[in-house]
Length: 345
Image 1 (cartoon, helix red, strand yellow):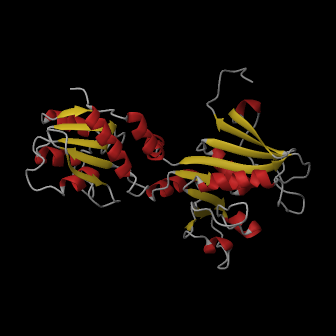
Image 2 (tube, one colour; image 1 turned 60 degrees about the vertical axis):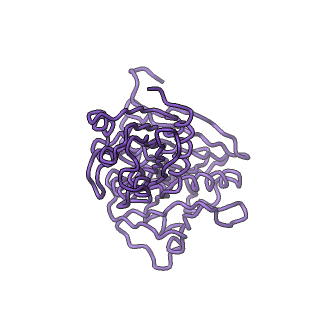
Image 3 (spheres, rainbow, N blue to C red; image 1 turned 90 degrees about the vertical axis):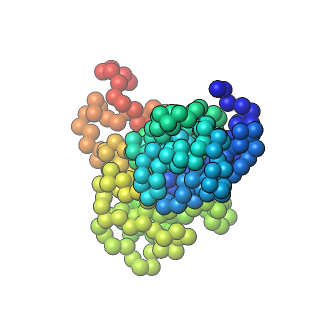
C-alpha cells in the first residue's frame, strides 16, 4: 500500500513535533496517530533520555483500544529493544496499530529492526516516507551512530610559513577580523569546543562564540578541556554560559567516547599544536580548517606538533573541498582521506 498525501502531511507534522525534543544522546523523534479515515487521533514526541518515546507518548493520550486499526506516522523506525523504556514496536502492536509509516531506518544495532518485528506481527509497514527530510533532522545523530563517535573538526590559524605564534609566544592576532568572525560562526555551529590545558594556561580563552561587537551568540558550544594539569579557579572558561567539561584523559578516542555518551554530536578542536596533532595522529578527524594569514614569522612555533610522519609516503593526505578568501586571509577546508595508490600526488 503506497503512502497517501494525508500520511505525508502527518509526517511533516511529526518532523516538526520532533524538534520539541532535546538534541543529545537520543534522537529527536515525533509521532502522529491517524484514524482509519485519516483524522489525527494523537500526537507525541520524545522529551529526552528516560522518558516515553514518541510513539508511546502519542498513544498515552488515547483511551485503551482507541488506536485499534489506526496508522502510526513516525520520523524514526520504532525501536525493538528494552532500555530505560520498553520497545515501541511492541507497544504499537499491543495498541492494535495496523499500519506504521516512518521516515528513517534506525541504524543502531540494539534498537534497530523494529520494522521486522512489526511485519512479523502482521502490521503493514512503509519506510522512507519523507526520508530526506528525516535524515536532515537526524543528521548529526545519524553521524554519531555510523561513526561511533562525534564528528570532529580541527581548526588552527597560521602564518604563511606555517607558524602558530611568534618567538615570544604571542599569537593574537595572526588572522584578521573577517577570519576571526568566521571562526566564531563555526564555533556556534558545534556542540562542543575542545582545547588542552596548555592552551588554557597560555591564552586563558573564553571558548565562547561571539558576535563582531563582542556580545555572545545565542548558540554556545560546551567548553571541553583535556589534560592532567589543573586549570586556575579564575580561568575565563569557568565564566562560560555552559559548565566546562574537564577530562584528565588525553587519548582522543577515549575523549570522543566520553563526549558521545554526554550527547555531543560535533566537536570543534581548537586546542593548539599538541591537541590538534594528537587528534590527527589518532585518525579521528573529519574536517580540517586552516586559516592562513599573509604573514611571515619564522621560528620553531609551528602550527602542528609531530604527527609521527617519517617520510612523504606516511603523510596524512587531505582532500581540499574549498578555499575561501576572508579579507587578506585564506581559509582552506580539507578532509583527511585514505591513502591512495602509490604515486598519487
